[in-house]
Length: 157
Image (cartoon, rainbow, N blue to C red):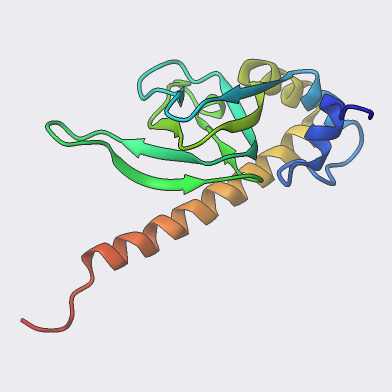
């Protein structure tokens, strides 16, 4: 049985599927296949942000810390989603923890490498940025809905 190559795995991920030209090769050149057992952190708030994770299997909790309280779960994402976009924005520092809920398989893409390729190939960089921005927008809207649910009242004073 033939093993799936890294470029094939990259090409299948929804973030990159259908990108023009040799975009898959650009990304695959910066990527490695990784796995994380349940409970392992993929990223820790405050650490240098250097990786974009394309989730292939398993679930990841995005968590935020508040003093004197357990971590609050902001969102849980699974296969087909991404984790980590702080590699794209200075000061390149993680703003949240990301923890494997169960066994996670991901394509880990080196952020500095990806930024360099995006600068060298502006059409690729623009297409990638459009897709990441669309995901950011979707997550922002979803967070707004969760906040509305959290702070909704039943109409009684």
